[in-house]
Length: 233
Image (cartoon, rainbow, N blue to C red; front, top):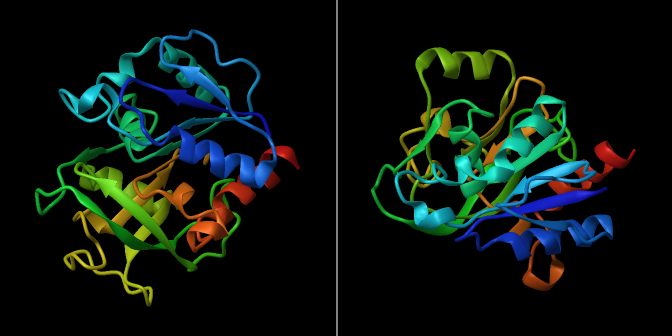
């Protein structure tokens, strides 16, 4: 699987993503600077976490106007697979590759903790490593992770099966108003969503940080294994 990772000023999770992708695919992803104007021949583009451009204006707003994002949008429009994690998810909403927005966490505090996610749609390349209803653990680290969208958009996401992941308790219970199971207050406990064609995925938590037995857990491995299986065959 030929993967590329886009790096902006302030990105800080690119090496974590390199490790996760290389661990599963055996190949080192290509690093792509935000001022580059070509992606090259890729199967997957990843927008990793961090604080692109210091999160000035809005998280992801300035990165959305970087030269490389024209190529990422064109890649997605042609049916390419794009994964955005944390700041990457914010950039995907700012470029309108995914609907909605990421607002300040409900408690107005930066959160750095583990959370649990429920897999809602297991049919995409990003989620096929799990079964629908599976629960897994993932770290989160963000101040602007409160997903919101218009009521019409939320209904469309639900009706079209485009909610990929939902925040939940360790036992799988979902409760929008419970800060233990929905730490940032996201609408309908949404942690990750898919594009209409299922080939663009954004989520706030960091599955790439739980892929190596050396750090105690491999909960995030199914995401990357699923991508390799889907994109390599």
